[in-house]
Length: 114
Length: 110
Image (cartoon, rainbow over all chains, first blue to last red; front, side, top):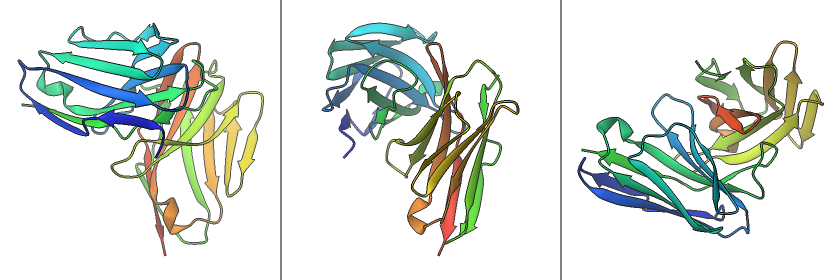
């Protein structure tokens, strides 16, 4: 139990579907992150929220839309995805936003685009 | 271009021996370095970190070494145990950016 819960664990969707990934942290942290992990590639930082405000957006296509309604919840809304978007999506949190803050990861959502 | 490289995708070590995992980075401006461990079907978990003002940090069986001139980071596990079998990722930080390596899969043979 890492204190960061992601749902669903697995998701299969067509390219025209709309779905959302959910992340919830029970650690009282102020920063939350979305990462993408593709096969044989390093973890790619997608979005960062600190105190519910987005602080980083690493040139992610607009078909990925994050939402952070409060400091405990983070969503990733998916729309018109491409086959290359199939990957493991990881959510993480840390006490504060900053590189010296160890991040606590959820177990990820395995996304497959048909 | 990758900012962080873990050139060994896998490593096998006998139980009780030392495991050495390596990580090379490109930018001398990186100022914080972390190691994470990942078991199958789980997210990464933080293991140990070091700031650029140090060259060594130790936590139990785990020691991280930083060689700034060589832009090289290593993780030593002594003694290695079967439960250490996992994928190990190094991560580096500067400014507002994190960069992760591709990971090294460690197998500790009983």
